Amino acid sequence: MSMILVACSLFGIGLLGVLVRRDIIALLASVEVMLGGALVLLVGLGASVKHVGSPVSVEGIALIVIVVAAAEAAVGLALLVAVARRRGATRVEDLSEVKG
Amino acid sequence: MSGLTSIGLFWGLSAVALLGALAVVFVRDVMRMALGLGAFLMAVAGFFAYYGFGFLALAELFVYVGGVLVLVLFAIMFVQRTGSGAPLLESRIDSLTVVSSVAVAAVLFVMVRPLAAAFSVSLPATATQHLSQALLGRLLPQFEAVGLLLLVSLVAVVIIVGGERE
Image 1 (cartoon, one colour):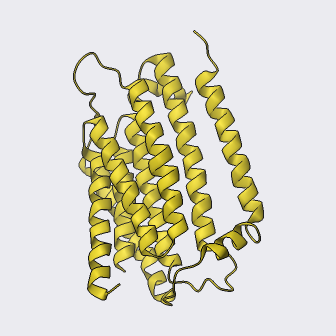
Image 2 (cartoon, each protein chain N blue to C red):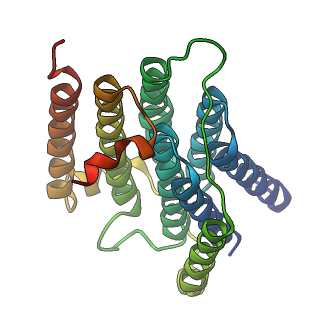
């Protein structure tokens, strides 16, 4: 129960960061916090599941999620560097043209 | 590990993770934000080790603390160039964002809480052998797809960052 509370709190704090931060680096870091909360929840629940004979391995799924999130962070940071190089801005207000 | 030590370790990790996450959200100095993110990621790795997933904890350390955090620091160095003083991050905090974030966290907690009773079987940690068997057995298509995704993302990063020449 405590683990669920901590994981949901981490997710909420990350969501708050996504909503209030105005800098792209801080936005990406807040997304990582949200993902960390979800991973803690996944692993914490997976620790109490019988693994032998279960259809999938929780550790394997968490590993795949970590790798996908790392790829997402790499692409996000590359976009950040490219946008900053082209426009000289890293705040979301300065990138309103991206909306199309 | 005794019960008291286990409880103390859990709440210690929780405190580090929550403080690191709060630093990511509220700290204005960008390097301190990166430090908070590092503390948070290490606490998450500690959670993995606490629950007996040693390989996962090492992977978290290598991939996030050793990879993503270094990428964030490099991005900060490339992007946050100011004439003088430390670069600062801005936030726009209002009551609606705080209330909606707390509401989402509360709804998530209420929805997930019944799972704690459903998954109440306590078991010892999984061995790395089981993980390798899963990754090269049942999860082999997903494992290969993730490898392909990593390759595509690396190519995308090279194209995005190095595609333009001034």
